[in-house]
Image 1 (spheres, rainbow, N blue to C red):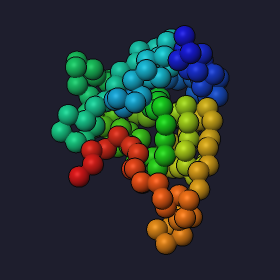
Image 2: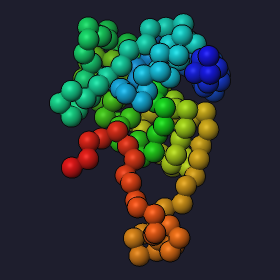
Image 3: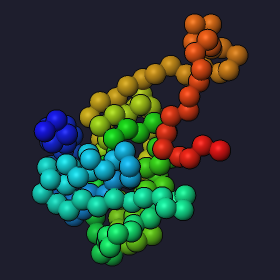
Image 4: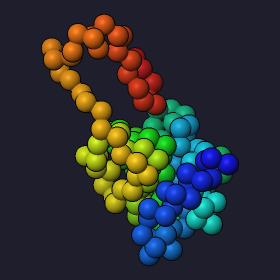
Amino acid sequence: MRASRLAEALAQKLPRDLRKRIAKVVSPAMGGLIIGHEMGRALGTEAIFVERPQGTFELRRGFSLKPGEEVLLVEDVITTGLSSREAIKAVEAEGGKVIAAAALVDRSGGTVDVGVPFYPLIALNFPTYAPEEVPPELAAVPAIKPGSRAKP
């Protein structure tokens, strides 16, 4: 129920003329699956996903795109935009055309560039520090790298 309400709010952030053009919603597995599915429902269109079986995004499970099919890429959280750009490449490799991206949360503070118009539901700005500038109270907490990419 909450995911559907969030998707409806996110869909309203998209310009009306853009919403009309979207033929499919594509989201990256795993984090984007639920919001991607709900965005498909909110927009009245099919939702599919890309996944990384071998380290790079690709369509599987019988999903396909028609040549030139206009796609909205939907994520839960975007920080650097790297995963979004990789997912866009996977869509383009299958013949689709990503015309916009959307996310529930933009953690870049509004600086991310995914190569297409980007519509977040909310934007958060977290401070970052060079290693030698980390405040002592934060330096005492173990650093954990977030993200969906496998760690070495």
